[in-house]
Image (cartoon, rainbow, N blue to C red):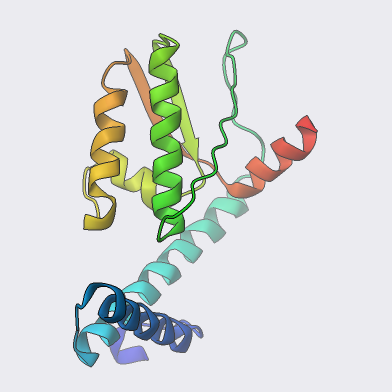
Length: 169
């Protein structure tokens, strides 16, 4: 769809996904949107997908999936929490990160780095701009993180996470 600036071969899938989401909103929330709004959302999602794929491709080309480097006295604590009953993977990641931030405050840590393989979540936390669905969770993460002397929210490639997990087992 070159006039819209979309070169993705997956545009049809994004259109179907937007229709699916619109149907869900109508059934579960009683909210109805126009076909134009659904198409606009599909184009927005496809553009975002294309942009992130291009960034991920250039990122992977310059980095050989090496784990991040930390000072020698750093303690790394993997945090895994299953979150049930949420409507999206992004929300589940946000709720898990919120629990990790809270657990660090109870341990009286002063300097922390929180890593997530959710680029959207990290971008929301760094820029302060957030989708309405995640606003409350992101605000709580930032609120609890304010007790640290130094806090960094960082995106980590899920291939690095998988490699680190395999190496630890």
